[in-house]
Image 1 (cartoon, rainbow, N blue to C red):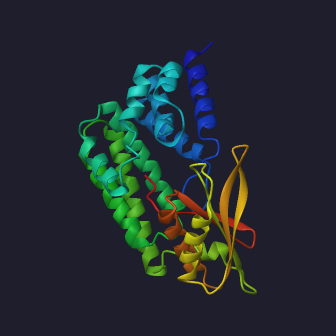
Image 2 (tube, rainbow, N blue to C red):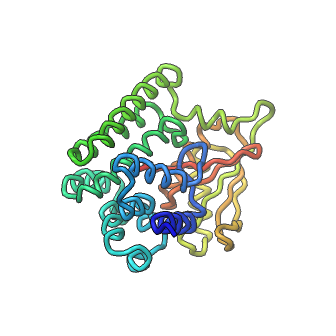
Length: 299
């Protein structure tokens, strides 16, 4: 029996289960496991694939940050080195977004060489996703700002692996060319989402789903907050308590139905509601097409 193959497939199963209901933030909503496998592939190619624990850490690099898996459970499953590498690449999610970004760059030089390799692979995957399937509402300026933050992060961690650093440089250059070309054709960052959601005939009815990831009871005050946010931009809407089935469990959510031709304003409203209700995303559906609208960054 080949231990490396069995351990890696065990880690793949572990990652798939931990991230089973997660998707990437781009408009294509790819399964999140695609990103993890890409990071694994990048690390394996850059290092020769001989370091099994490094490859497993690449695959599991987001498992502490984005799932309910505990450090103790991760260490029990894959050992102390995998745990350490994953911890080195996990942000403190209690910090505000801007502070997390600053902290990520400031800490990069102090990471172990292996952790820096994983982080650079993570950034490469994120930049590829930004070019292929950006989050709804991201215009050229925001994409270029994100690209610049990625360059600063990688610059702080250079000197660990020439191959993966060269891959990043090529990816960043390709992403910049793509963004600048797009900017000449699409001055409005909402247009990709608009094209996905707009109906050619009639006035669309947009369903806006405010999730409840903290599993608390929604109150009438929450409904009032949602109504006030909608009323700033739209003359009428239907707002109600609802339930959603997620991860096999029922969760209370808020649902708004907004009839409007102004899809861009609906997307902007969804981004605003992410901040108001402190949720990572808000769902928008029109004519049977659904996307998640995010207010934060992809990294």
